[in-house]
Amino acid sequence: MKLRVLGCSGGIGGNLRTTSFLIDQDVLIDAGTGLGELGLNELAMIDHIFITHSHADHIACLPLMIDSIGFMRDHPLTIYGCEETLDILMKHLFNWKLWPDFTEIPNSQQPYMRFQSIALGEAVVLKGRKITSLPANHVVPAVGYHLDSGEASLVFTGDTTTNDELWKKVNKITNLRYLIIETAFSNSEKNLAVLSKHLCPSLLAEELAKFKLDAEVFITHLKPGEMELTMQEVEECVREPRPKMLLNNQVIEF
Image (cartoon, rainbow, N blue to C red):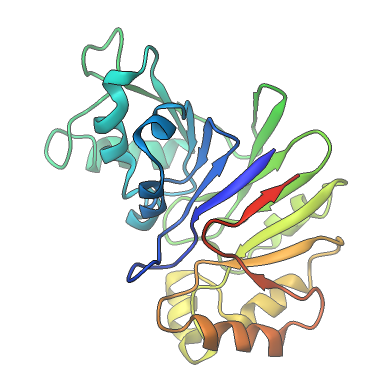
C-alpha cells in the first residue's frame, strides 16, 4: 500500500492543508482541504472514502468532490464511517440546505454516492487491503483506522485524546510499521487540548508510554503558527520513540 499525504495540518493558511490521505489511487482517508491537491481525473479514480469523524477540517472537500466528479463515474462513491458520523453528515450536510443529497442524485437507484456504516473493530477488505476502525476519544463520535497491506501495517489515530482502548488494540498488531498520531496544541494550551479532546506534547508523551511496539511515529494535526513550537516540545517530552512531523506530499509505503 502507498499512502500519500494530501493534507495533515490542523488548519489552513499558505500551503497548509487539512487532513486527507490518499491510499494507492482509489481509497481516501478523510476529505479535508488537502483533497484539492488532486486533479479531476485523480478524484474520479477514488472509489472509497473512510471518514474518521464529522468535523469540517476532515470533510470540507467531500461535498465539492462529489459534485465535481459524480457525472464522470459509472458507480457510486462509497463513504464509510461509524453510524453516528454518517448520520451527522446526512442530517447536517447532505440535507438540501447546506448541500444536495447525492444519495438521491441523479436518482436513488443510481446515486453519485452511498453510505456504508462500519462498526468499531470491523474490517473492510478492498483488493487484499484491510482497513479496520479503531477507537478514538474525541468530542464527537470518532474512529481511527488500521491499514494492513498484508505485509505491513499503518495506524492513523484520527483526532483523539487520552485513549487506553486504542493502545490495547494497537499493541496487538504484529506487523505495525508506522503510527500517525495527532498533537494539535502546544503545552501552553493543555487546558484547551483537554477541553476539545486533542493531544498536546505532554499528553502525547503519556500516550506513547503505553505504546509497546517498534514503529516509526509521525505527528499530524499541528495548529498553524505553532508547528515549530509544538514539535520542539514533542522532542523535549518524548524521548523514545522519536516522533517526526508528518509532511504534506509525503509518501509512505508499507
